[in-house]
Length: 172
Image 1 (cartoon, rainbow, N blue to C red):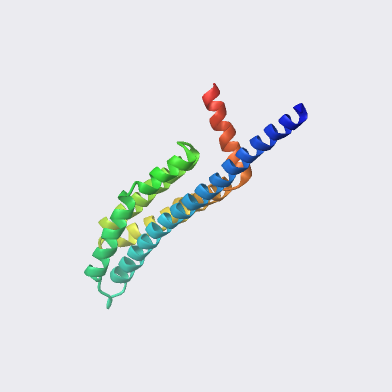
Image 2 (image 1 turned 135 degrees about the horizontal axis):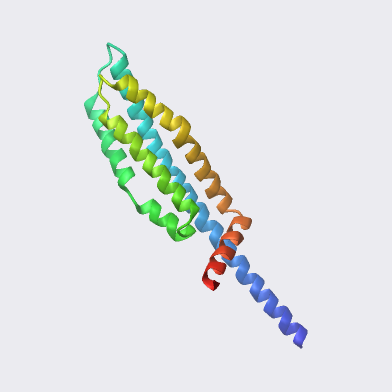
């Protein structure tokens, strides 16, 4: 009878652990895709602005289309100022390295957008190179690192590691 009770207890514990891990995988996959999509949207809008200004400022017969540029800028500003994705990420992952990586990347997105918004035809040669270097040396590696961290966080090993770290933090 005791062995039956112990078996049932073990089965219950394993069932709860399985359900917890399955739910975490689902939540983390959803937020990973949302964060990556959010970053892609910002990246694409910044790239559009850069290409648009590059053409307008370096090619003599190309005009800067103010309506298209303005619409893109408004959408970019809304994406950069949005905190919804950041909040969801922190709810799922907690305030840790993943959230810090997202915040750092957002800071550099803001930096790039400020450079692009402030760039004029007179200083484009310098600002255009600065933006390209910011992407090449900072933003692209940070995006890749954040994406890798998010994907790794959807794995069982990452979930268990996060659970143990959170449990240990509460105990101590």
